[in-house]
Image (tube, rainbow, N blue to C red; front, side):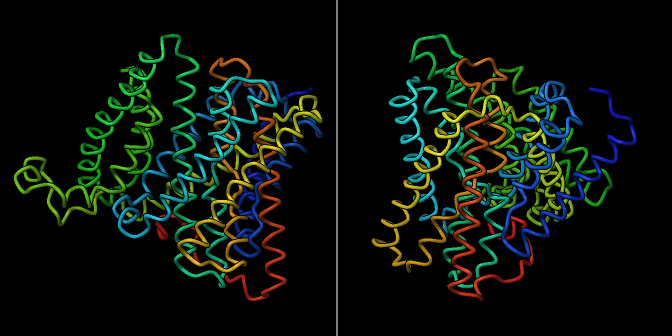
Length: 426
């Protein structure tokens, strides 16, 4: 394969960005996600068109995947208002934890019983494929005029919360699979890493929020924050903390700093140098918008990268069948939980339950986490990316088909999408 010229590479990068932007607009207008188009573009550039060498792309995938992971976590923490979630929608926590836990358990049981794997590997795979994509669900759900506002908030919150669960739980099982000690020592090591992450993120969040207050309105503030994220991740890994969880908590601290400051007693607040009239220093609208755009960029390129390194020789009938079964298990669990909650507590209509059940598209978190176990040297995880691709494709297709059917039943179900920023919903 001949090396591409500089102008060709730059042209392809521009083309990918343009297609990603067109996909975002298409999503807002029609409710059809751009995931399949971006993965398909990667397939056309790599396995089909041979414009990019999959092996060369695989060499950079761990670095880009880790960067994508950090951006997802920081964005998730930044836009997750804990007090609002706990106060207004405890039902979202119940639905999220129930659907996720049962999906992980169902996947692990299938992995052990049918694929003859171990329970830890099964739980890891279950955590990876059991989370919905907030970047797909939130824009789509906000277009559905026929859904009550409470349902929209619940589904939006669920997609934001479960992204965090996917990453944190999957990383915990990866730690267990990498750990060679006895079970009590393994659990102790995990708890220690999470405690260190909490302490490090708390200190970094307090200091960085204060620094951002001084830099308010200054240029390059976001670049400085992005640099801090990368340095903090490295520092966390060097000190024995869980780097990914540290970044999640760092974003959570910044996103909820105003509430945290208000909860401090006066002397402590003054000792830290914070004043309530400066409590908006956490991250202003400008910085949040930059983070949203960077998330879009990382998301777009990672989906294309997923298509670039797709190995069709590994996509056997058995792998596709297993991926389909994983999707059906997730769908079945979600349908069951929505049906029970809808009957017992919420009295949702049949249409509302069908739409809520369809809001299960897998996305970037699933794609990124599927690659990490093999990159970390964990045995018997080579097929995880293939399973993830199958589940992502089927879940997006299922959501698209169900919404198309619902639109036929109620033509006014779709409305123009004013904004897709999760922070405006959460």
